[in-house]
Length: 489
Image (tube, rainbow, N blue to C red; front, side):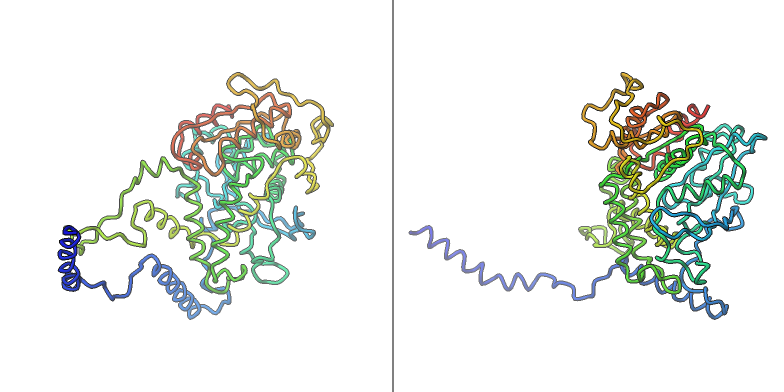
């Protein structure tokens, strides 16, 4: 009984002294919390409003609202083809009455017009793939286009367009609807990749280019590259598909849906009708942050940033414990914040929504193509080359020891092979990246497998290592560029 008594005796002074000890502790701050990352949105909005006020006071034009001008690169640096005729649309009963398509070129067109490469862009890229005499700034594929490079301008005439639906010179949601005199906004018809490609074929017809030497594309451009050849198999000599797919997967759809969700939740989006008001800059910034995560890889983040945090402010006592911030604190956070900030006013929000949705809808399996009533040009195709629901055994001899047939093929692979039958006689290069989480290597293998099953004996398939993820096609000049140069030669 003595031990408990001693314990109780000792415990009383602790309880008596507790208030005294607590009173010596520093009280919690009563200051209002400070969130620079949140305040940055308000600051940006204030600047947009001020720019709008200044523009309004210096101009009487009704279009001088705070919505930024989507004309990067400068309109003077690219060419515009105006197509005055209606363009049939995949998902709309009404055609697009007319359209503009912005494009740039590199190299020299041969007398026979048979050295043309059509280069397809990713989701948000402009036609400015490389520097030109009209625009000396570097393009998005600067290191791959030029004399002796992957797309050798000593040999080829390269054309790159801004896709319809975009905002860098081609007709899209931010363009003026000739019927109303107002921006299309979300009255613009839902787009498909095939619609974008049809518009490009209109440009090629205008330029009197009967056949492409090659159709080349990365990311969304890889989808477009396949679709270009599928619509006109007799007019494409070679296909290059880099980090793309022939059938959007649920995982990539989910990633793009998340981007659209945060963008459309921005009150400034206003159901897409924001062209005379503030653009949804906050939603765009968040959407870009999500997108950036899908473009690179975890191992690269670890190598570049690790768990490093931003430097302490000079006013902070370095001898005290560092107090974490709720705003960007880790370097990876500050990087994502910067990426979002740089992008949020450079691209039209509706263009992002429309084009990303077109990527989600892309599916070259035969049932999907038949549902949309899509058919390729048949001017030089035999019946065997046309998509068919027949159950005959597909060609499989082009598989090799280095690339055997899949042991457990996905259930849709046979339908994809049937859908890709029109490409059976076109030499195709497929490149995948093992660290890509947006368009995984499984999707690249799927394209190669389906083409081989469809009877294509000229499929070259390579998987690249490295830690750059989906953006490898922008960075790895040696491996990506080398594979393209060798294949095109």
